[in-house]
Length: 115
Image 1 (tube, helix red, strand yellow):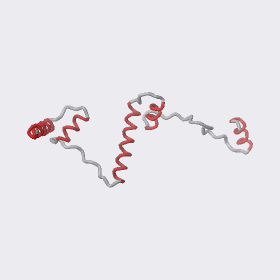
Image 2: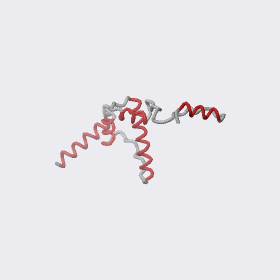
Image 3: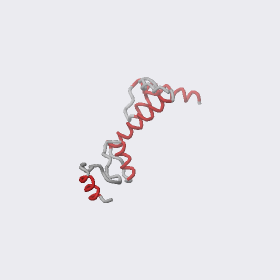
Image 4: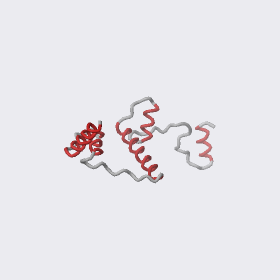
């Protein structure tokens, strides 16, 4: 049945024609959504920043939900003055604060002494 005959049939029954797409994926995923990021990848493109951020946030939510379902509580944020705090600074591409730098230096000294 063609689109025009479908619309004619709907009109003859006294119903309004549907505004929904007839067939195929005609709706385009918008940028800034996880689906938009998937669309970039399907088209062989590098995702734009809003899409990348949305996909990362969705993946983080999914991972946390999976951890909670398995009985693993979320990790507390890294505290400054610890090796983990130093690594968090480096992960965020920040200059480590003085307490974190000192904790890293102490860890390095321990490693050198153990070698």
